[in-house]
Image 1 (cartoon, rainbow, N blue to C red):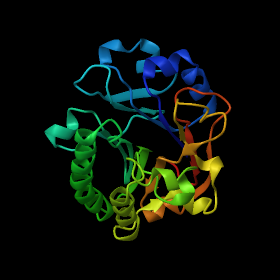
Image 2 (cartoon, rainbow, N blue to C red):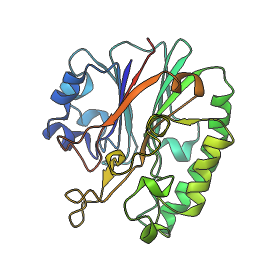
Image 3 (cartoon, helix red, strand yellow):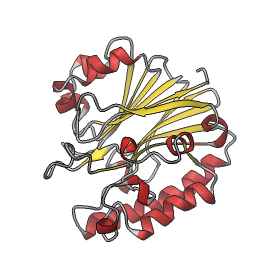
Image 4 (cartoon, rainbow, N blue to C red):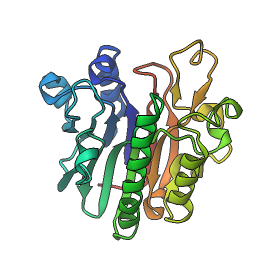
Length: 259
């Protein structure tokens, strides 16, 4: 089972940069996308159901903002849209597809980089999301949470860690929260489990400022976070950088698991 996670920074923009032909060539079973920046009515037929994929979406109410989606070769047994928390769900940040005892989630945590009010919203999301993660961990289901977590966990996960310690995405409170997700709740950072020492090759996001992409001054903020059972089946993972569809790069993981 191959699963891809990709923050598109605008699905229409990514489409114009060749994302969908690339996706079709990957042979993935599930593709989780984030930051659609579109409403359903903005999407073309090829975006709604590209090739032999079924498309499912949880859009933000605000136009041109946030939103997540899942493309799947097989229709899920059940689809869960949102967390049931109105203030969060209006921003389109959580979509869960269920296949038997497996859940695949497309997730987009808020960014706090645009100001204190958004950092406060990020902390509020984290406060609400932690109990949900605890319930999922104890549910007996195998779960893979794919997406942009907007947190670099450790110093190895970004190039300029020293100068970013007071910046959103690498704040001590954010990193400690993610540590609790892994250490207290038992969730597994799939890529890091496979490649514990990977540095620059693991980055998934680069600022559009300066020459961040050219110099690989990046951050690893896109993850597959999974329950231990399904995480243990992960065979290989990689970040695709041969083409640029957005300011993020797709994260691809192969699991020895069938849906």
